Length: 467
Figure: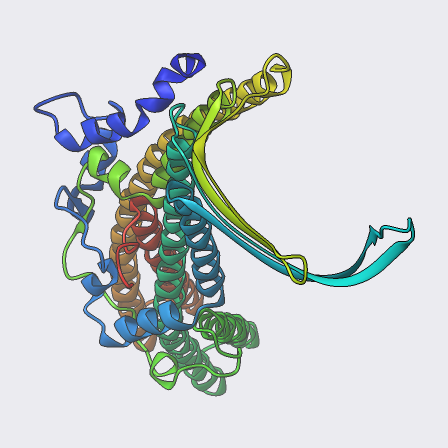
C-alpha cells in the first residue's frame, strides 16, 4: 500500500502519547538547553502543572470577570466557534455515508397514446401513468474509503477545535496583558506625578535661595527645566493608558469608549500569588493548541491517503429496489423487485486515482513538516519567554535597588543643600538621578508584566476553559 510511505505521519499521535508517558518511559522532548531557562527563571517559575485558568494566579476578581466576558463576547472567538460548528456539520454529513442510502421517487404523467382500429385508422386515447420507485443501497466499504473519509472529517473537526482553543489562549492572554498594563500604567502615572512633585520642590527651594541671594539665576532655570521634563512624562503615559483601556474594551466585544469601570478604576498592578507553574516539556506539548491542531491536520491528511488509495479498487454496494407502474385505462399494472450487488470500478483508467494518491501523500508530508515545526516553535517560544522573564525580573530587582538608593541620595542632598554644605548643581543631579531611576523601574515593570503574560501564552494555558 502507498500509505506505508507515510508511516512517520501515522505515528504522530503515538509520539504525543509517548510524551505523556513521562521520563520513566522515554526522554522528555524538552531540549537540553531548555532546562537552563527553568534554572535561570529561579523563583519566577516552578515545575508545577499549569492550571487551566492561569489568570487566577493574579487573585484579581476584576480580571477573572473580564476574561470570562471576553470568552462570551469576543468577535474572534465567535468566528472560531462558527467555523468549528460548520466543520462538525461536515463531519455529520460524512458519517451518514456509513448508513444505507435510500431513494424514493414517484411520478404521475398525462399523455396521449394511439392504437390501430380494424379498418386501419388510428384511435387517439388520453391516459394517466403512475410510477413509484423505492431503492436502498449500502456501500460495503471493503477498501476503507468511507471509514477513512469519516476519520479525515473527524480530524478536521478536532483541528478546528484546537484552533478555537488557540484563539481562546490569545484572547485570555491579550485581556490579561491589557488589564495588567492599564493597572501598571496607572501606578506609573502616580509615580510620575510624584517625580513632578520632587522637581517642583527642588524648584521652590531654588527659588527661595535665589530670592535670598544664596543661588544664581542659572540654578533656578536648571531647576525649572527639571520640572518641565518631569511634567513632559505625564501626557505619554496618560495616552498609553487610554489606548490600552480602549483596546481592552474591544477585546471584550464592546466599543472602544465602553471601558469597564472596574478596569478603569484599577490603580495598582496585580501581582502573582506564586511562581509561574511551567510544568515540563511533555505537558507543554500536550497543552499547546497549535501543536494539537498541527497533529490533527496531519492525521486528517494521512486519512485522505486512504480515501484516495481506495479509489484504486472496485467499489461494491449492496442494494435493493422495487418499482410499480400503472397506466389508467389500459389495465396495465405491474411490480418489479430487484436485489443484488453493484460493482463500480474505473479500471483500466486509474491515472486520475493514482495522481490523487500522490497529491495526498505530498500534502501529508507537508503536514508532517508543519507538525515538526509547531513542536519546535512551541519549545522555542517557551524557552525564550522563560529566559526573558528571568532576565527582566533580575533587571527589575536591580532597578528597584537603584531607585531606593537614588531616593536616599536625594534626601541627603536636599538636607545638605538647605544647610549650604552642597551646591545646587549637586541637588539637581540627585533629583535627576532619582527621577531617572524611578522612570527606568516603571518601564521595567511594564516589560515584566508583559513578559509574564508571554510566558503564560507560550505555555498554552487557558484553552481548556469554557464550553
